[in-house]
Length: 218
Image 1: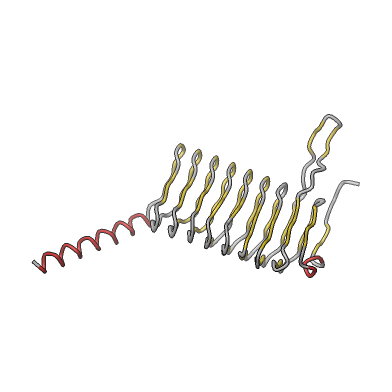
Image 2 (image 1 turned 180 degrees about the vertical axis):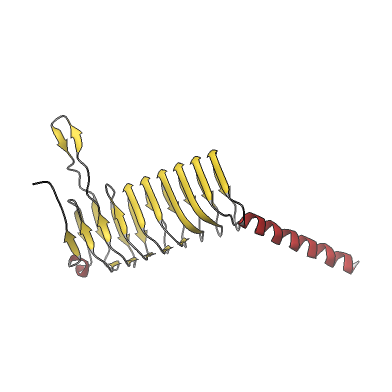
């Protein structure tokens, strides 16, 4: 009886291992529909056109890319990279990214204690980094950037130039984005401003890193 029980237990463990290995080798590729990754599940690349990605705590995936949809990551998730065109990227605490976080129309909110080995980029969306580390650049065009806690950006922080918007009175774009840097947050590279930005910098050492590179055509 003991041998039968032991054999049954071994079979169950082997099945679980095989299932985990299969999931790790499985990619998700959809045109319509969302992708849900459960807790402690591990997948390869996830690619969606119209749909969102949800990953539960302690899960992992390769490159996660979406065209129209958001990427929602819970605590202690690991991905190679995450990008979306129309949607936000949000995470709980402990996110680990081997590459980049990128979005065009959406926010990037990695949660606390994120470690990002690449860069963080948005075009039309805010970026908030809290007690986190980014190995390369952080950049945006039309979004606010907020560095809180003891966040460290090892590369440059860049506000890229903005295009002018057509109004009743002509072409203009007077709304300034805001850069907030808390007292304990650090940008090891430069703070490059290629447009007018509202500065709220509580760390005096960061003031000296500001470089204005604005070409307004005049």
